[in-house]
Image (cartoon, rainbow, N blue to C red):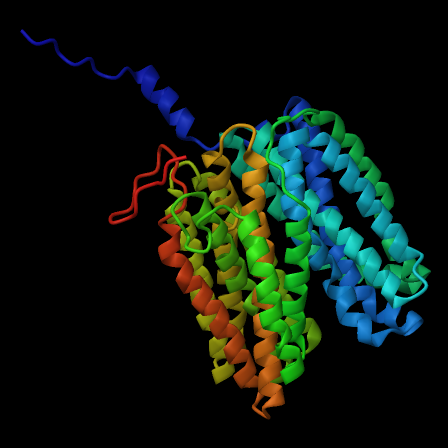
Length: 479
């Protein structure tokens, strides 16, 4: 006689329900981990405030030092510095542990602040911003590498949601704070003000980090990050001023940058091969989709719809808050939704938001623009943290930061390329004598195409054991 299958006990069901429940926020701040969490959050907020304050005070710097031809480079220098630093920082974490690279990068960031604060010319300001960008890019990789190496899987979504929330207050108060410091004490003090906070963050974070890594971790020759930085600079520089001479820089930048990028990112990234390569491609498309539109929504509201700068700035703030809200929701669903479903849902919301924003070019009520870009912000909050979480779960122990840095690099490139292509569309329309509406429509089309391209690639993301493969999805590549 066959034995009856034992029925599940009530206690087992209760334990299973608890396991499926999202972890409490209190766990993220418990014990030694709490110091690390607090320090990482302070660093994230500090970098956000510094980046936004620098944008606000640059007009005052230009008025004091001159150097108008270098104004754009002072804005973009930090991004160029980050391109090369992200892959180097990620691999350094795997080789040496996060503590030593973080200490070096914090000192470098402080040096960039001091250089900019003491700058006698706009060229030296740009050099200081470049040094800050190198440090910020490396710290981006080191911080998320520390999350991958220090926090268990179930807490990582909560940590990433908290990091996203650190951009809310800086997004609202960073530029006014920079303007207030400049008015009261001078622009140089806006670069000096973050120094004490930097010291506090270092005291909290460094003792809580592992001090050793893998001695046989992957090495990356500095040639490739430097070549990528130069290639990206040439390409984006060629997009800035639409002339035959400047456009010649674009193919030169591609010829330099693409081979270097191929040496840095996982093999198969350009084809979005299933697994970590698809995650890197997804990070690029997601950021390009959002930032090809984000910077141009206020321009549309002020120059096409006749709104004030203050009124137009609300749309950026609402998207920032919505991004954090989306990250909070994602942190509660990360254990029950597949990575493919979360990224596809986020990309769909970004596409819908872009279409609604584009309706503002056709004289739809202005309120629809605010609603649409808030929806897009929620989509970014859902999809953006899901991609690094998928990479963290798919990498071998000891290689987390190096693999993660590829997705972070592609994310940063997506921000720059999306904004650059959107700006090129506006500049081309102006040079051709077309209306601003036509240029903005081109920028919005770039964002829409990137979000639509992301939808099929999301099915190729690394899957966790609890994820079910979508019907028709390609099989997961082996290690």
